Image 1 (cartoon, helix red, strand yellow):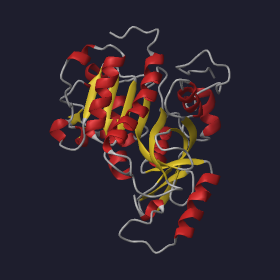
Image 2: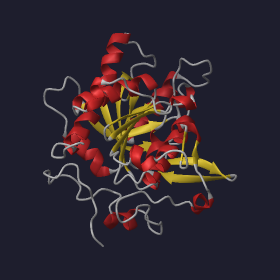
Image 3: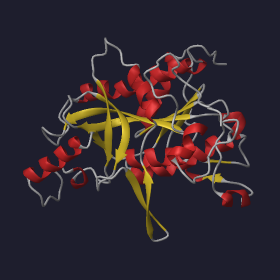
Image 4: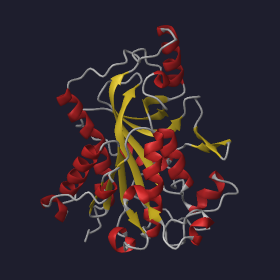
Length: 337
């Protein structure tokens, strides 16, 4: 079986030899599971029921397979970047347009899913920038439709990033964390979802080489630190993350600190609300993916986000910078039409 890795960084021998979705790696990492990619690198949707549909309506994106020429609209996409708010993702799209010197940098960006009234999606050259709201249900809804969109558009070897904000663990506020795995609220590296009345556990491990590649692009003159570590994806902002400042709390400061130190001992660097599900679904789809988040506070020192708005806005740009370097690296030797 031949390696089919579409390498972003080729000149670093210290990186893992293959991406996790390489044909050589898939059977080893996912024994007994069908390979979810076609020979040309496009996504193979492993749902036979989709073949019975005359038209597939991507309801939350406001698109479908009958009235839109998805390959013509999105076939050149290489990267999808997702984040919580439509404002952040519009800013990211503008940033990428300028970074890659794309024609869109001088145009008003168009929200391609505006009429769905749920999410925002901007396309600048080969990059899609998509908002996903807050929390797992909102994020997985649009993520699954984006995966189908990429498949129907016949996109080859896409890479998906989540860029966002988080609470850090024992690292300075303003730091960036590149996630290596997602951890659920029961401290397992899975996304647990009830299906037909029974809970399924999907592994929430992110691509090791992608993680290394992103981290390797850290610059000595950055005014922030970039770390690799696990990320807890909580189902709640307050008690689900062990905070003391929510409307409900029946545990002590000592309980909270014991929990946070347990997370730290497990290799968790930050806490947000989507990581384990994002890692699980992209992995199941055979898509390379990564999570890049800035931290707004050190949870070992408190629960409230206290920096002023100007500082927070500046910090929010840091995941954009890190993701942008990776995207720019890929297109270094490729002319974008």
